[in-house]
Image (cartoon, rainbow, N blue to C red; front, side):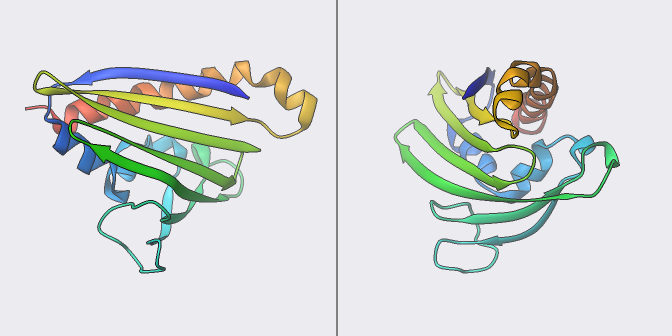
Length: 160
């Protein structure tokens, strides 16, 4: 699988950054408008609708329509793992459906002298077998602007 990573330091307390990223409000605020993201529903691990945060086992039903072109693509995102210790936390979501054959995104957060290090690690595979593998590296051209936006927005929304 191909890998994309991005890291930034946010001048905001770990708890604030962690809580913000663990909600669908955070997901919507950090997704560029050109993705055409619509969150259709959210279910907690026990099936509860609209949980206050995205716990391990939660699922998010959403659609994306990049640049408003073509029909929207339905995607289900499952929070596969979520753990927090003193000053560190991570959660991992996997997408089912949508434009990727596989998508595993690990969001990691580390307290750092009053601020927070935010690290995104994405492992992905495009559809179409060998052709998808050949074009996976070129996908960085699409991922880089989206993650630059995500990190810039995290700073803009959470820094004092």
